[in-house]
Image (cartoon, rainbow, N blue to C red; front, side):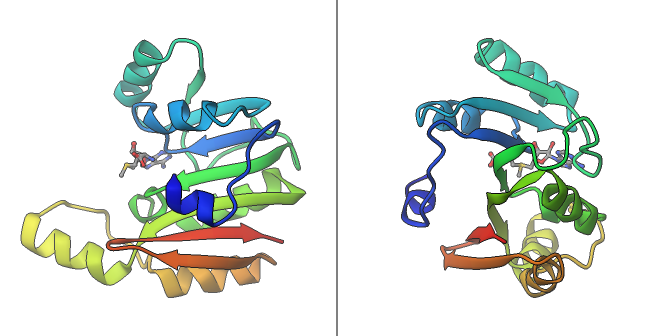
Length: 165
Ligand SMILES: C[S@@+](CC[C@H](N)C(=O)[O-])C[C@H]1O[C@@H](n2cnc3c(N)ncnc32)[C@H](O)[C@@H]1O
């Protein structure tokens, strides 16, 4: 969150969607910044159950990020996705869906590791990420294809992006 603050994260009075919210820790941090609305989603039912138990006051959904059809076009001011795309072989579909649900002046905040680091960790620690062509360079290429521009900030292991049209 401090790094995202430096990238200009402003979610006060904004409609926020968090993709791959896990057990809800991000939801809590996001709510401290007073959004107008917040929805967190994750494909893992156990994670969402934990999130709901920890934070019954927030909205969480079990949902695969490749299908955001329950959200209208141009309905979100801010989409947040931390460390999730590299878990999804069809990660391009997620970016396409985000491009659809973001309002024209909306912002996507994204955090992902480098493809090379994922492969290293899988080799040494057998973390078992799915086979995927995901990497920051191919992701950046796809973001540009969808009309996005971005600023980024490298941190050890993860690179943070502030993305808009
Ligand atoms: C590394 S964790 C990150 C969790 C959280 N964003 C954080 O920063 O602590 C990756 C999350 O992505 C979720 N995930 C993986 N594939 C997904 C998909 N297809 N749709 C939605 N969530 C997914 C996992 O269940 C997991 O909670």
